Length: 462
Image (tube, rainbow, N blue to C red; front, side, top):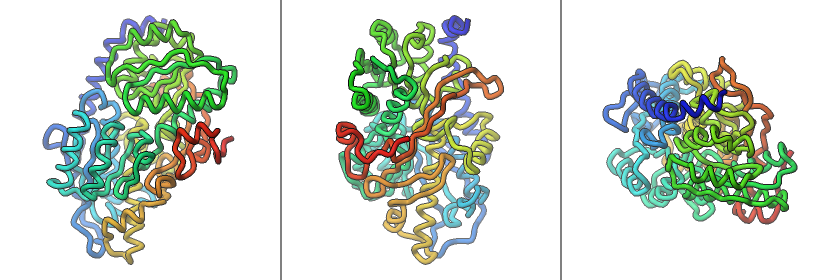
């Protein structure tokens, strides 16, 4: 009954998603005290004056880049929502310890938003504008791996502190070394090694796999890491289909037909944004997941939006221990409460990425102030404090452990979709399992491909 219900509603749901994103944009724009003076850009108001740090500026101006429109907005809008509500609380000194000092070192934070839509060339131009014209103190942003790959060398050229909050391609720090670039969350390697280990835990008799991934760096690297990990851990598994539709194609009938014919035991997908929801809406009524286990490494984001239309039996990840898979700690309870009170929805995992990145920036600055004898630090001093930093977050403790302290490691959590919970408005996740960071991350200096090929040397797994 539920599947036929999905057939009828599929177009309506997709339209509803877009309308929902527009409504959320309008709510974010209207929710006091955040203002959005023009499309795609906005500023938080300055906080009440706080006791200043010696030599401090009047504000810390942060350029935030994420998808505020288009098919990436299901990830970008929740991220902006998180930034607005957290910075408002930080400026008011209302966050829990250790983040209870107002602003950053007593200096209010001002946000300047840029829409990530438009492709890498546009993002490079916008980055230059943020640094040279807006004169931001740092840039925090980027969902798309293509954006991060394009912006990273420009950050080095302009010598501006830049923190990637959710793009995940491992190529950033495997193919180059950066002074000004940091990333406060894990890479595609972590998510896919964890997903492969989880799949083999719940289905040890796995015989065949297939992939359904977007045709660019994120999708290609994700599938390679998942496939090679499965084959390293269980060499008799066969790959029966590899599908790479265009990013944000939105229509997948041919790929779904190919997967139905191949009949794999499991289908891996790193889809995100509107692609994630569109694929599930189209595949479920064709009974694709009746014959194959869907492995959605970042599927947590679709649980609230699709509600009871998410079928049971899917393996769901959240790019770490975020969203529905976040730990029960004080910061998480606080973040969930203030987000829900403002937006009448729970934060999904991209919102957690934004939250922990803001906390990481605040922790780095305030560590640098302490190490500078209580005086406002230089950018180089903030960078030195950020390297190898460990800081608390709603997702647990984040360690800047790789790439000479510029790349975070984090544990990976997964669960399986179960029954719909009317009170929560989404399906429950069962069979939850967390893989420690030391299990799913390679040691310092070793590339992911090499680590998998050598059988995961140094991995400490349960």
